[in-house]
Image (cartoon, rainbow, N blue to C red):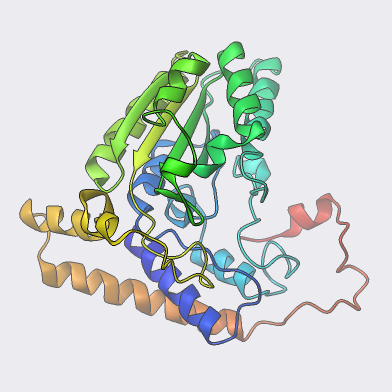
Length: 316
């Protein structure tokens, strides 16, 4: 969580300094829920994160180096400078690149789980993430409904951050709670305080275990607040100040750090040293990437079409 937060702070700084072209979308306030997804999965599972899941990506094995290379357009990154932010992944390792259209990754993961079933593979879990607004899309309905009918081991994680861009919950859905949707689809539902890391780890652990043991799809709804704008271009002035002051507006990283100190696991000074260490590593990595060559569109290999040799030759 801390490393992801520090990395995103660096991305924000690089964006404002003009080094990043395109959008920058941060997950501040959502790290506890996100990291709990990635950390509860294991090798061989499928993970399809959303734009604010840097913490989950890193828990699943993504690196700060590849993240920075992608955002900064380095020719040495996995995207080779073709894409500027979060549409990256390693499909052979079960880490799926995100499709921008919200909800689209649910049918993708559902299809991947069906393929695993056809190959006779068992014990595999597929997890994907979405926001409260994304639950209103047709792709969400079709994907989750198909997974429910087929009783697939899908863990559908909803980060209810109170706003779909600038649209508040009360203009997004009419049901009393997003968790009510689990009843309609006939799947197990779990609700969790998304600001509480311990609760998130526990609930996601139970959901993943249930899916892995044949319990069918699991819908997990984490209640939290996006503590930044939709993107770095958005000042989030539309967010109700009352929400910021409420329990849901707590910073999950600060809550986790306070719990660690209260439990006697570390002192505030030790936590401060962790941040300094993480920042130093991120700064060194960013400086390295800024020196790397940008892509040359005149090179024959740098095209929109690639072959498997690019995957085979790419070194993490």
